[in-house]
Image 1: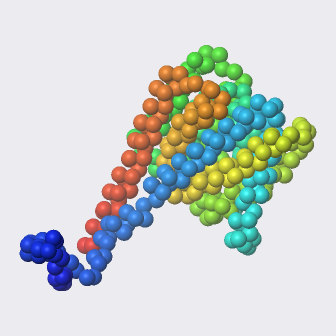
Image 2 (image 1 turned 90 degrees about the vertical axis):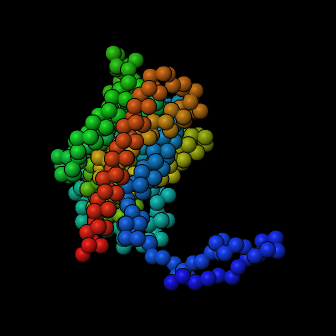
Image 3 (image 1 turned 45 degrees about the vertical axis):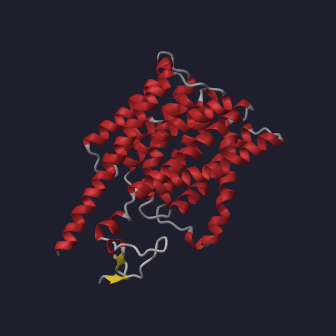
Length: 336
């Protein structure tokens, strides 16, 4: 229903009749399509993944810094787990310990084993090679995840997304091109870490079907801490105050990074999230330059451009497919 509103005088003169605004006092209800789009999880998954990329890149920088202090990777991993656990404990207490339940204990154990291998090799690799190269090699993980998502989780991975993932993989290889001929121990360790990360991401996707992301991270830490104790004791050297501060900082960034990662996997297909993970590269290059004066060469930026292009394509395809599906759903409901 249209109703008139009081006229407003401008400079003492009443406005022309065609400038008198009318409105419906009852606000219009959003369309069905708008309400459906507001529930779209693809964009939410991208945001959570970008937060994870930034936090994990900072964590990699902290790991490299600890390597310069000659802190063993086993000791670093234990402290990272311990301080992350202490960060999560108040949040879990607020939710109530009754929420820390799961019917997927065996899956958590497998996830914890793969997670421990990924962390040990990840922190060791970052002490041997530059952050940019370590990050580039970690981009092998989405390839493993995508293969697993297709054949283990039975997710639908269309050909265009396969091509985009492989294109990003080629971009990562371009970055480390100068070192391909003579691959060092650090490169092999980084490749092993990528394999373990891919397996871990696949298991996380399975866990998110039933459990809350915070609970997944918390239970995983409960299982992984005992695994990390004995190796840490064997190589333990008491840190000085500065090293303690760096070790303590690994906890919050690890929680933020892995909680955001788990949240992203709970909102979208594992193969889609894997494509967005390539955004870690510019963060890694930035922190490598700021903290360690690791200047990136032309090949790094060429590879980064290819990676960004493939990631952007994956995001556009996923969101377009979801939007088309929502439009079809809205039309079917309106016709019913």
